[in-house]
Length: 291
Image 1 (cartoon, rainbow, N blue to C red):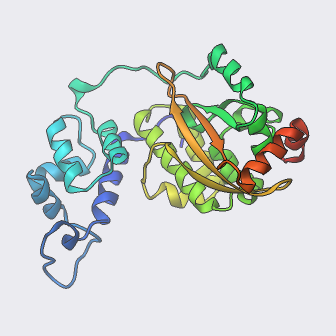
Image 2: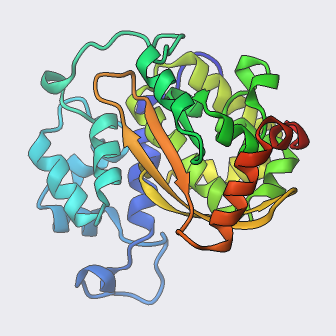
Image 3: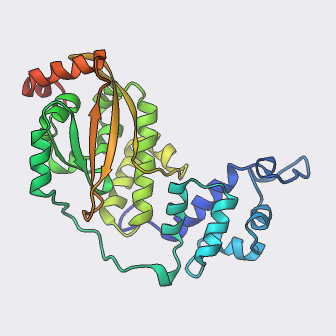
């Protein structure tokens, strides 16, 4: 999968998979006929819900979205019951020409501001790191290294969350709910691919993971998307045992899609005690984790 992702194919498959997950009764339509040749809604049923002609919707689902209006996209998104992230992804894939901005090819380097690096270094008790496009890990503090491993020992191309989750067996052990972590990771990458289908490095990453990981290949085929936000992760650290940590994602204004991510424990909990222990061990804890 070299060069770039096929935007038309991405649009076609995304719409098809969203339509397939809906049943007529889910959207208030009568389910006529016992034998349905396709899973989910038929194209004509979806077109009826969106208020467009079947021919118009068919062209869109075939990837011909260059002249579709924002109003039609909104109607289709409502008919498909898309989430906010899914609707944004649909817009990325089939944005009307007049609304597109020429952003150019994605830059290779994603420099982190000096002040942000200083902020990371000053946070001594909370694991924190900065990610960029393609799930790349750009910067981190000592506590992140103690929790996740010393990413500084890895070659720069390997400092990538998707590669770590799918190709590094130690991360299967680290994340208790690895299946959910894997699903989230692929959904984030899908969102990125919708924004930048012309990014050759992203396309190469997807191609590599598709070849090397059956789980990635299966999840990629679902076309599910989501944005990084907040939540809870359960981990099993080789030194301090099980931890339950809340994570928060802060989008950085005016940066190239960078995000500042922190993990913290509930005050007074065993996980908070475990984090304090990791902080006291510092670099010794990071050295104990394979990368």
